[in-house]
Amino acid sequence: MKIEVRVKPGSKKEGVISLGGGVYEVRVSAPPEKGKANDRVRELLAKYFGVPKTRVSIVRGEKSRRKTVIIDETP
Image 1 (cartoon, rainbow, N blue to C red):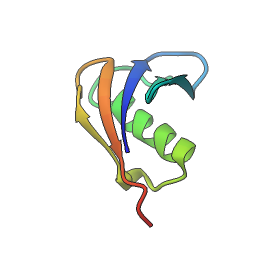
Image 2: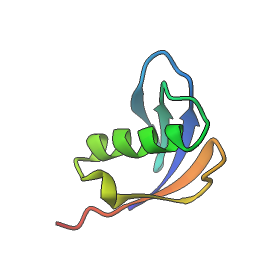
Image 3: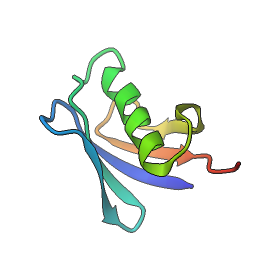
Image 4: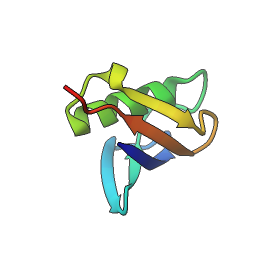
């Protein structure tokens, strides 16, 4: 599954919110430095979709707040 993600780093509350149409907002408390926020985004999306973190890949936007993410849901 391919989704679009809008990241809000440095948030007080963490979580994933569906905005509809395959777009999600992910709030993370981690700062946007040295990949910390990206790692937390992967963890939260993995938990939200019920898959291992290794099945969540950021394919575009590693250094942007807007990302394209692929989630491999195959068993």
